[in-house]
Length: 325
Image 1 (tube, rainbow, N blue to C red):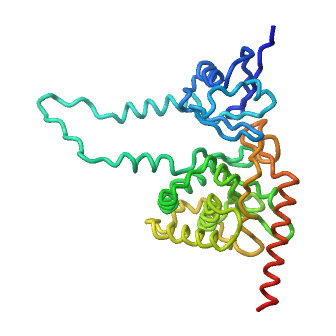
Image 2: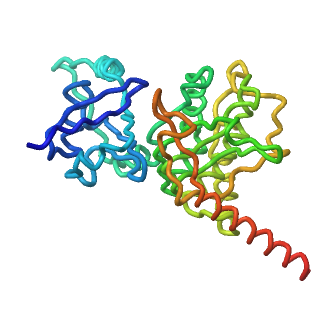
């Protein structure tokens, strides 16, 4: 008789293990999470690594066997039951009271652009993930949410039909060398975007507009991986759209200068990234953490070698153009 399958996953820093019959599927996992943690399937997102990526219920492959996930690392990205309860209560409280029959009910608007409303709900960042092992993660969450809700960013993502799975912050120590500091990374054309929010000394946050400009750069990697002319044209267009549609002239007001670093010029010794990573995986178990006990692995040796080769070829082309000029 086959043994039961034990599946371990992480949720808000807590480790959970559930047992299943041998032939159970990922749908059974969602059902068990719903019954044991009181999190409805519709609110569940599973970050499974390596390779599989971010899955949202209903799953593309609802019959994916749990036996294939036994050696995977799984993070459940979903609100806590208490948060869901608070949202439900707020929703009920916001509903208008029943009107008296003597008062004529309002006539609903004839035309409602439901397609536009649906696009606005999907053309955004699916999940906001600060790094919980760095100081003040909630402040980082507010910074990321400010970027997500920026009027200019929302308008540009809507226009280009951009959807990003995870928007998270970058640990400065992991992306700093003597020569440069990386400001952002785009993994797998929008699966995950990392942004360098903090100063190198971890004593504050970088200038909002510098970070927003980095985000424009990384959004362009949803379409183009290499830094070619097509990429730069798209980046310039996104930056212009963000500026034109930012009715607050700079995103959100910097209340008490909470996210402003006056010593951060955002230019010298820095570069946006090394190009969009299309082969690299945002893998749990490496250096940047999603939740306690689950972290994100940086690109592997093969990817780094390929990236270095691309950079050498680019430098050779630039040298050839300079010699022929």
